[in-house]
Image (cartoon, rainbow, N blue to C red):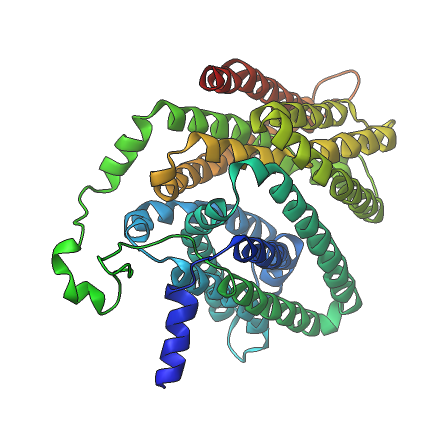
Length: 460
């Protein structure tokens, strides 16, 4: 027992990196853990989750609303960020939150239980939202952890390599799981759910193991003997404890009182607006209005992801050389053109427009996510990075849901209105894509005129 407790303490409370090799090993472990985490998110969401919900009696509308509301789980970060920020060591906390994703595996076994549909529905909702809440609560601490392991000069190169690996693993696993779900459709659907749940279970264990193998640069208070003050030493040095004051409102006021945080917040909201007002509706546009076969959409999406994987490492190196904001601005031009081509798409020209849109989307997404995160890290206060990431993520998550809801209402209104207009047929998604392109143009101008201007002033 003493050996086990000692080992546990060394792994989760004494895992300081001692040299560059420890840092590099931890960065590699994070790639493994994040690849597993992103794959879990895909296998426990989208089509797979909707199929599970439909099998236990949810309607199409209910399933859609429940999957969308999951983004609201980010709001729980606001209520836990102060507690988490006061933890001298966060490795154990992050690993425990990672293990709560086991609920995402277990919900796929619920249809096998000998209980009523209403009970199954309650269990699915509970398991799904508990897992989502825990994942959101642990995200800022995880982001702060990896940011402390990657020097600023290497962030573009590292995060691009990580993104390429994660996308490849995720796409491959989704294709495999999709084939399994197709092969077990119908009466054997429960077998497909079991296999999908088993894959998620293995990935959760891999995720937790990879994070447990990482080192944590975050260091607690040091006594005169050079030892960190935690565990029993807290009782030996009671006067060295730092009292924490303030509350949620005070933390938010402090964050918004800083010009750099306001800049990061504005940039994130502009990006969220451009994304949620158009992109969520383009898959249904291809299937319903453009009458494109599902196989073509899957194949062109897979090829687009392969292109993204191929160019992402190069984009990362360019980001380190020219600056995150500079390259992020140009990556958004690719997504801007994606929206333009989808706005021009009609049943008569659907295939060339969708292919061109997918190519430019791959070019844009090769750095869009990396660039936004990199700019956020540059703008946030390093000493308060975890708290500010929590505020940023929570508020932008709620905002993204609201934009998606309003855009859905606008889409319904346009579909009813445009269907009655005489002349050549227009489609609601053409207007939402124009709206998305317009907000992306505003985001690009904001990056050029505000964020890059700040960088130039700092360099001078």
